[in-house]
Each structure stands twice: as C-alpha cells, then as structure tokens.
Image: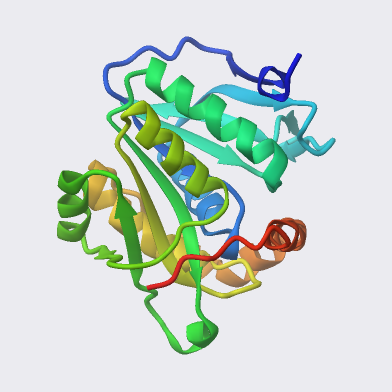
Length: 248
C-alpha cells in the first residue's frame, strides 16, 4: 500500500450536490485559514458530514463541547463544503492529502476551490483592517475576486500545501483560488481571519458575522497558541526544503 492509499476521506453523511464550492482552512501562517473556517462553520451552523484519517497524521484527537473529534473534518451547508484541519499538515502527508482531496473534489464536480491562508507582515501591529490578496488559475474567478475587494497578485510564489492544491487543480482542470490576508508572522490572527470572511461573504453569498472574532481576539489567540506553536514548527520543516514564500 502506498502513502496515497493511507489517506481516507470518510463521508459520515452522503455528500451529494451539484457543483459545490470548497472552502479549505489548514493551519499555516497566522492560522488564518483554520480560524476563519472554524468560525464560519460554527456561526453559520454548517453540518459535520465527514472526516479525513491517515496514519501519516500526528496521533491527535481534539475535544470540543465534551465530544472527541477527528482533527481534520468536513462540513456542509447547501452547496458549500468546508475542510477544516486542526493539526498542521507536514510536507510529506501534504503531498498525498492534496492529491487525494483534489481527486475527491473532481469526483464531486467542484465549481470552485477557495483556499484560505495568511501573508506574513512585520508591520501587522500597525494595521487595523488587514488587506486580502489572492490568485487563481481562472481569469473569470480573478475578476470575481477583484470585484469582491481582493488585491490580485501580479507576481509571486505560492508555497506549501495550497501550492499543491493549485498544481493538482490545474492538472485536473479544476477552478482553484487562494485568499491571503495580511497577518502576524508567528501569532494567531483572528483579525486577518475576519478580513478573509468579509471577502467570502461577497464571493459566496454567506453572511458570516465577524464581530465575535474581533471582540474576542485576545481570548482566541490564547486558545490557538498550542496549534500555532505546532504550525510554526511545521513551517520550519517545510522551509528546510527551500521553497519560496508568496510575495506581492
């Protein structure tokens, strides 16, 4: 059995819809994706419909509201599917997971993949409302992103897990995009997640209230501290392979 087969996507409830939009939140810089997707699925009452399991993942389970849960879960509301990871994805399993996910997206007939991340900014402390940047492999999606307030990247790099999602999406002829909010380099950034969610509201028709993210920012930073430490260690391991980061 190769590593690809060691990753399994389990649907606890049948996911059957036409042309879903996939929203991904995986821990990386500022935990922007994880915080944004976690808040979105809770505030909008997404239904948990599956999870992803693999022996390549760290031996971790999470506890929320007294329930023991898999750390990588799948949620659904209408035609929106959300992938939420509460563990860092190291480079080795990341290669396998990105391939497995994009093939699953293809089977589901995904209309669009939206990956959420952060863009490290040393001067973040001086910014009240972080800007959101983005890119896509589809020109029409770029226009829609720009119309929603996204600053389209003209030059740069995408690295890490979401680069693999983009690469595999191109190979499978899937529409894929990445949204990046200006964020703290090494700390959880609920404010950056709020900026992303405001853009998602415009792009998807959601109406996620971000007030709680801004009001409880300090508490959230404490709650996400352990995950941020694990993620920073994972990013350091990734950087050892000398992969460039995205820049404007």
